[in-house]
Image (cartoon, one colour):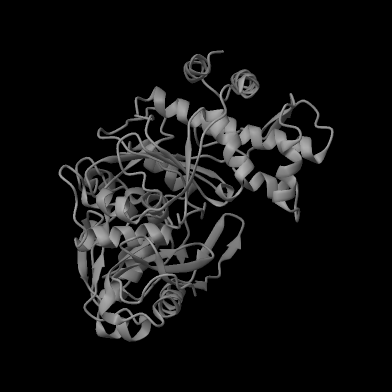
Amino acid sequence: MARAASEQEDVWIGLDLGTQSVRVLAVTAAGRVAGSGSAALASSRRGPRHEQDPETWWRATATACRAALRGLAAERVRAVATCATSGTIALVDRHGTPLTPGLMYDDARAGAQARRVNELGPPLRMSPGWGLPKLVWLLQCEPGPPPGARLAHQADLVTRRLAGHPVASDSSHALKTGYDLVRACWPHELLAELDVPEGLLPDVVAPGTRLGEVGAEAADQTQIPAGTPVIAGMTDGCAGQIAAGALREGQWSSVLGTTLVLKGVSRDLVRDPGGVLYCHRSPDGDWLPGGASSSGAGVLAARFPGRDLDELTRRAAEHEGTDVIAYPLVSRGERFPFAAPDAAAFTLGEPGSDGEHAAALLAGLACVERLCFDYVDLLGAPTGGELSLTGGAARNSYWCRLRADMLGRPVRLLESAESAFGMAILAAAGEGRLAAAAGEGRLAAAARRMVRVREVIEPRRDPQRLRERYVSLLSELERRGWLGAELADHARARAGG
């Protein structure tokens, strides 16, 4: 448990239901963490199957909350909001008791159902891990759900337990179950074609909406005071974007962990004919375009198991001028910035050492990140605002500098960019105690107060060698048939090559 702020300050509680643990933070208006707690979660994996016991989500939440709130005065707790993994669902009965295991965000058994959904033309193109294909898969299992069964997203089970009664889902978690953000409703015709009873689906409200108050039973288990407002949250990816303070038009958050995720802000809906980028909706009314690559830092752990990554990057820095470059896919198939199910990792040139190989992978990841920005620019999304780097890779100073050089723009590093931190900001915005400036949304205002920048890294003047390697990688991706000519030409033009 961390304690870094006066116990007399107001705090807002952020809950993050992750894959391996539940994380809880109590955060002050100045963005200081007053308390933290976590509790482990266990998964069951076999082939395409990935499940968790939904009851453990609540038990882990209660444990983590008690740790985060230990020693904090109850009257200082103002509100709580929850994020969870996007696309994770279960069926529950009328009392909220789980009827099925929790099908996690990457459970891939609904492949046939995803193909059927996409044939019918949903608002967004869906993969087997999305909520709607998995819901159809559950409905087609034997025996079918009993009368009164309801769909619950992962966050819904926790918010219902907090409030002690049924609550609406938020539109962010409902997006991958087919909720139409443009029309603000479930896609009735599509659901009818899929034989999904509309009574199975929850009501939906905008993130930041007050869902209810913490009930007596939940207060006893979590130590969150009874009567604390429960605020509708967002998915973990959106929570990370909020924690990064990327909430004004043109601002972006780049999350580099096992994989690479980009999230930005646009006043207008960004439409992608290729289906690799999609938009959430901010409580402030803006659109949040984003995409998730299959490339990422996980490739380093896979290629160099057990190695000290800081030492590896020090060796990589010695080979920054190498001609070798790698396309760093973590697993087969690419999702963003282009869709190529058959794409596989490759290396151009022969690295002569582990350091040179690491340099090729680091540069390759920086190239993929740049190509993502070139793609969103091609779609017309604004890209010129501040860029924040988060995720595990943001702790490596050399890598951050390399990425700033490749992108040719400054990058911000933050004191805290956890998803639970983002939910504390959303709880503050939903509770409405922090004042907004004229023309400023409540969420952007809360983030302005609470997000703390640790460092800004400026790019070096003219890393021409990096741009040459980027252009070489573009040509190879195009030659292999994965990268379309329009994006390749646009990216080359922006690179001046």
